[in-house]
Length: 278
Figure 1 (tube, rainbow, N blue to C red):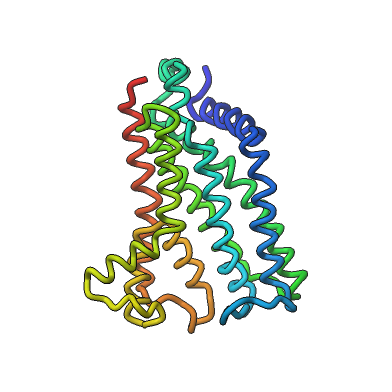
Figure 2: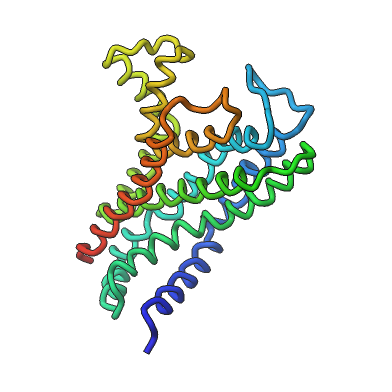
C-alpha cells in the first residue's frame, strides 16, 4: 500500500514535469532570463549609468533593485501558470476523478498549490543563484550568505503568496475567463496600482501625499506596504540595505506580515478546496 506522503510526492513530481515543459513555461523562461540575470548584470556593472539618484552600494543594493524586475516577471508567471489549475479540471470533470481518489483533500490541495508554486519558483531560484555569480564577476565582491539566502528565500515566499491567491481565484471561478481576469487584476493592483491606492488612502486620512519624499508620507507608505505582498517583499529586501536606506517601519510588523501572507492565503485556499464540489 502506498504511503500518503509517497503518493503526494509522486503526484507533485508528475505535476511539475507537466507544468515545467508546458508552452506557458517555455514562453516564460526567456522572460525570466532577461529580467533576472539581465537586470542583475545591468545594475552590477560598474560603468552603468543609472537614472536619477540611484546609487549601487554593494550586492544587497543590486538584489533590491533587481526585485522590481522579479515582480514584473516571476509573479506574472505564477498567474499565467496557475489561473486554470482548478477551474479547468473542474470544467472537464478531471477534478471529480481526483477527488474520488483515496487521498486526503488537504494533501491534494497542497499538491495543486505546490505544483503551481514550484514550477516557477525552481527556475527563478536557479536564475538567482546564477545571478550571484554575475554580481561576484561584475563587482568583484562575494555576496554575503545572509543577503543571498534572504533574496532567494523571500522571492520563493513571494511566489508562494501569489500562487495561493491565484489558486483561490481558480477555485472560485466558474469559467477560465473569470479565473484569469481575477488573477491578472490582483497582479495589476499590487504591482502597478498600489502606489495610487496608497496615495488615495493617505489623502483621505489627512496625510500630505503631494510630496512623496516627505518622511511622514514615506512612513505611511511603508505601513501600507504591509498589506501588499509586493510591499512586504521589498521591505524585507530593503532591511538588508545600508542603515540609511532601511525602512522606518518596525521589523516586528514586517515579520508578522510575512507570516500572515504565508499562512492566511494558504489556509483560505485549503478550506475552499476541502469544501469544493466538482
